[in-house]
Length: 103
Image (cartoon, rainbow, N blue to C red; front, side):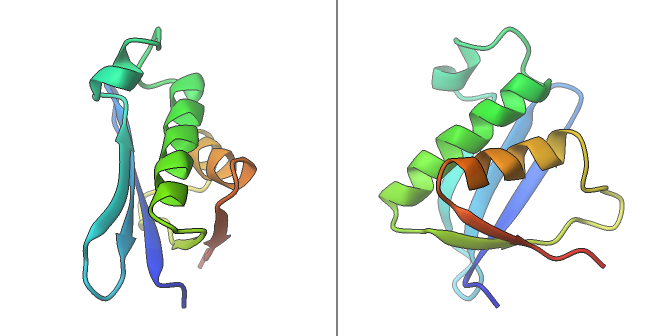
């Protein structure tokens, strides 16, 4: 198992994602479309470009915290497609190795 887990939350109004250490439960990197630095550059805070921006910024913050691998398991109600897939793919494209565990 990877020591860090990825958590993605998408609502009708915003997108947020975080990397959490599995043992200590501390968040090492967080990004969301409600923060001022991301909110100013986006037209919409819940579309695919917003998901890509969240993934890119989360990857930058994760690399600053020396995190290069993570695991992601979708919640029961989430499907690994669309916006969630965009966040994960953006993380992968920006240098974070994400292992996706689908049931």
